[in-house]
Image (cartoon, rainbow, N blue to C red; front, top):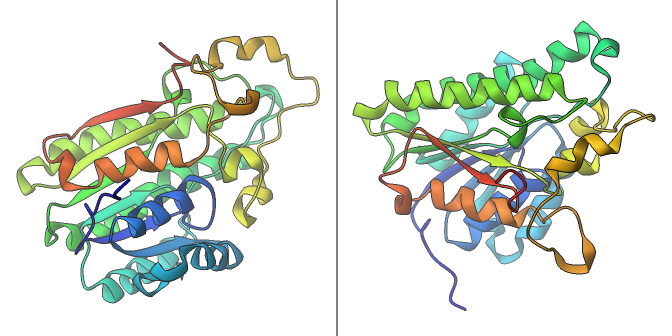
Length: 268
């Protein structure tokens, strides 16, 4: 099957590019001919992404960024847009997941999740706007979650952060519509990623693990309807990366201010 080449000549920045869906998005855009800067807090993860890029590694650059830190974001986005010579697509895939009983959630943990997921998306987007405004068919793809609209127990901080991202995506789509910058979000659910697997330095530091006494019957409504190979319960990150690639390309030129749910029919 011939690979699409929707990103030939396009300049792309992907945060969270060192693992999971972020890494899969980097590799998908590279496969479609794009030039990409992968950003992540994990230098080890970025090295893994580079290794997996293979022959396309000459179109890949990596930058270590802590998206929760304003100075780090400013320096990292500046370095990324300088290497790319501009910016056409921004993918805000970086994030963390914390699961805990609500009454046992500390203020520090709650604020950390919001700081990384919601504030981090704000900071990266704000620092990228000037370059996007001058870009070709500029597009931003943010990461919400099915937890933003549907009940996911033990994940109150994560759900709050993703709901905020989704609302912000709509606001930005309207604000920048006349400037031609498109803003959309993906809503992954039941996806294997760096967060759900607990891989990647940032993910391990905050930990996605459910409480030991988790009532798994509460998750009955989050099971995917579509069957997966070998009885798996999580789809691969490529299932989201393909949607990210569409939304960030000119194929989605008439799509803005919305979200696409990728959950195997979990929330029909």
